[in-house]
Length: 70
Image (tube, rainbow, N blue to C red):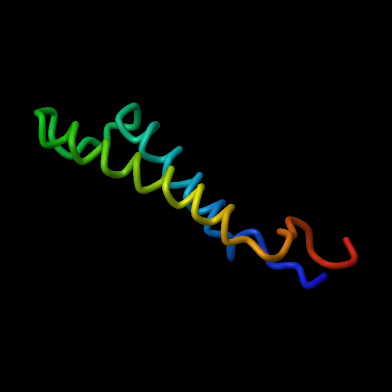
């Protein structure tokens, strides 16, 4: 079966987006401490989760994490 690199996966990128949105405030990367920041954070969370679900549903090839022959 034709494998793809991990960085070609929508599922992986959605998970990365979701993780980054969760740890960004602890790194001091906040948009706005008010309600606008809360809304933006929720939108990013939903976008990441949506990418994970969509990517998994549309996946046709397995992901390769190692170089071929390694």
